[in-house]
Image 1 (cartoon, rainbow, N blue to C red):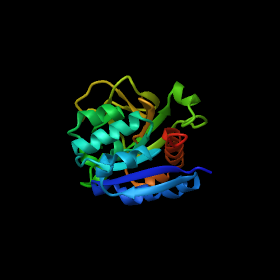
Image 2: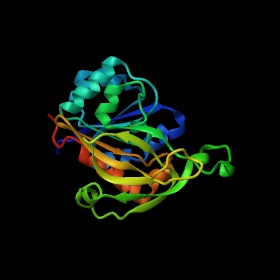
Image 3: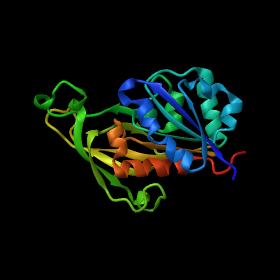
Length: 235
């Protein structure tokens, strides 16, 4: 059987546990016929031969920076059929200074609304809220989310700035709170796909910690998303 090749690129802010988080999915990739390479630097994107031979990029790099050459290599590879997938800040809060990267992935983290000021312990849990992920009409039939019900989480709820090129499979709603400055509920995409040239992009916003990634619905969505995004046959 001809194996596919997956490239796992991880790093950036340690608060999203890039090593532990990605390690959760390496056995799944291998069990599904991928040869897996792990890189701790996004400069691998500038290697044209490596990227042309890669069927799937799993990126977990929060914030950080990317060189012009690496970004061009990533965009070219995806346009030529390499899949790009990830979760939470590892893909939706990467390379904040790059508008070209934002256009590629189709969504940028803006904020995660927090608890009432009187209920904040002064830790990352200040931004943990109970919220619901709701599968859209499209999501009810899409292979990534078909058969899944709406589900609840208690973790960071991402507010994402996005555009209409995305196919949104699940959303989440930020309610109006008296201690926040907005005045109506905001619906934000929580899971989406995006076509880019011959390539596919998959993003799930839940995934702040490995515990969230282990939540059955989250893990199922990510595993299906990885397979969906991958190029089916290596060139």
